Image (cartoon, rainbow, N blue to C red):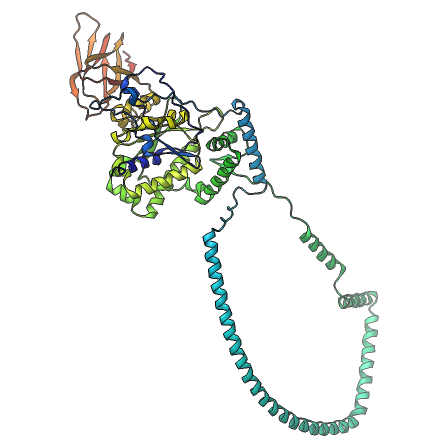
Amino acid sequence: MAEEPQKPAEEVVAAVAQPETEAQPDKPVPETDKETQADKAEAAVPEAEKKEGDAVVVTEKAVEGEAAESEAEKPVEGKNQIAQSVSFKEESYVVGDLPEAQKKALDDLKNLIQEALNKHELSSPPPPPPPKEEDKKKEEAVAAAEEKKEEAEEKKEEAAAAEEEKKEEVVAAEEKKEEVVAAAEEEKKEEAAAAEEEKKEEVVAAAEEPKVEEKAEAEVKKETVEVVEKTEDGAKTVEAIEESVVSVKVEEEGPSSSAVAVEEEKKEEAAAPPPPQAPEEVSIWGIPLLADERSDVILLKFLRARDFKVKDAFTMIKNTVRWRKEFGIDSLIEEDLGSDWDKVVFTQGVDKEGHPVCYNVFGEFENKELYQKTFSDEEKRQKFIRWRIQLLEKSVRKLDFSPRGISTIVQVNDLKNSPGQLSKRELRQATNQALQLLQDNYPEFVAKQVFINVPWWYLAFSRMISAFLTQRTKSKFVFAGPSKSAETLFKYIAPEQVPVQYGGLSREGEQEFSTADPVTEVTIKPATKHTVEFSFAEKSHLVWELRVVGWDVSHGAEFAPSADDGYTVIVQKSRKIAPADETVICNSFKVGEPGKVVLTIDNQTSKKKKLLYRSKTTPISE
């Protein structure tokens, strides 16, 4: 029973983690940032990694290690505290920045690929696997049994044939006797008939001999006249006769010399070697394997996925090219697979460095209808996997593969309600299959893995296994419990880019503000009141929006004129907003005289709060 909660955890991470290939583990580095003890506890690190293909599969035991986020839980102290890993910096894809050993590996890989392209090997089917010893023994036993059976059948057939042959010999002897007797009688009859016929022919010949001689003489005369008449027509008739004679003569002698020449030419063409084929053209994500510096970026991804082992990277590329052809990636891009899973996995916004952000939300499968529609049979599971690959393929093709461009993404994995969902067999099978495809065919495409709404059972034992992970792996993984999820996202993604359901201000549809409008972040200390002021020297129209992550604070707004005899105008009456509301407050006010609009946020809780706000001001003409 103790292992039951671990299995879902393993599947959660495996389903969402993008593969990475690591070198030997490094020692944990000391904390460099000055943070509170609670913030340090948030830096939970995955427990273990398995190398499968180019990927590190983070298991449940590996990631059960972030201190609890809720205020009810006690912060980890002393030896239980996990060291905060330093920020991971992506490796350069500029060839000139690479160490010499890596440059050489890249050149060697290019040579292998060029040779394979010349021989048209990259997209050819793989050779069949060698038979196993057990299979060989089974095949030999079956062959021996078949051979014995055939021998027995042959003996039976030989015996039957011998018996039949004896019968046929007896019948043949009887028939031969009858034939001899019949032949003798027939011969006598034929001799008598021949003698009779010969006598008749002699009598007829003697009577008709003078008539034959007269007829032959008349035919000779007729032929002579015809020749004379023809020769009187002139040379043309003679030439025609000669040509006819020559033609007949040639036809009688055999085929013409031109026909012989044509036949010889065909034989020479058949014997000549075929012209050399042009090198094969192979592209991945719309970029040829050998073309320009963008190709180098792709090859470096495969090399890094295999720790710069050239042959292993080359094998991985060959397998990827074949898989893309068999899976039908090019046609998959245009395939309409519906929109049932648009809330399960979606891409929205970019992080502070410009990486596209992909969100994985497994809690959506709490919808029983969606779950059945996705996993009730193998055909539906395969459709979901194709949809997931299609989404990733479209995202990858939008990346800039130039050496100094953005060629990786950030993944945000929402683990809210994931334990119950990932314990379901059908979902585990589908996510494992999808993960394997991503590991094998999309290497080095994730810059950061951010896990949010991490449950308590996911946070144990990380301190025990932290030393077994490389610094590169630890720095790419970030874990945050429910109360710290929004704040953790804001470290890497600007609030205007974070979806509203995760504490940000990014919403779908027509809005007054867009992701191009920056957001101001303010931390409000416990038991304090914070004000935001917008001052005006002329008539203006002010529009603003704000939210407090987690709310549980009071909020109000008023306009205070600059004139001493002016009256304060209440724009929004102060009221307490509960955490369940989690709304974004949007408001506006037309300023008719110099003064200021004051927003007040009163935090009377014992927790610090994150305030987000932004505004626009438009002058009002007279």
